[in-house]
Image (tube, rainbow, N blue to C red; front, side, top):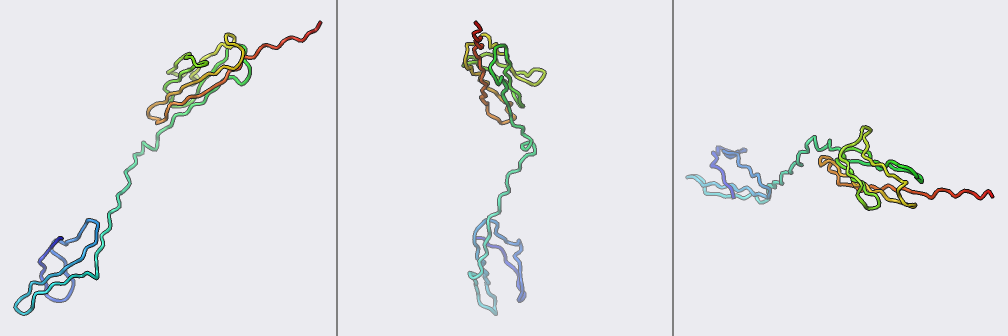
Length: 172
């Protein structure tokens, strides 16, 4: 319950309380007017129950989004390797943006970790296919991105095929 007043009344009309009482919290309010009386009039009290005043909650503005948040550049990487059978040294590399490091594994064994790209923007190794057994070999690359990119580390895969040399046809 809140109260404000008194208000000097000199006749019929609209009047405002001295401090301009106005509820601010959400809820339903009923105005009650009270008259203390004088020598010519009796005391009176009226409730305006038929005219409730409903105060709604003030909508909370959404949090301000900084302009920098819209400029976050996500990390990106793409693996590159041979597309056919290889017999010689072959490059396997990763290109992308926001890369901090690239760790290369050949058939599950760690080969190298690179933290800087070469002059062409590649993070890569050379695989000596001649020293591998015949068959399929898997190169796995774990790429770690800059913290500002808000990108989780990714695992990329490249297959290297070492084929048997063709057998010569019998000419005899």
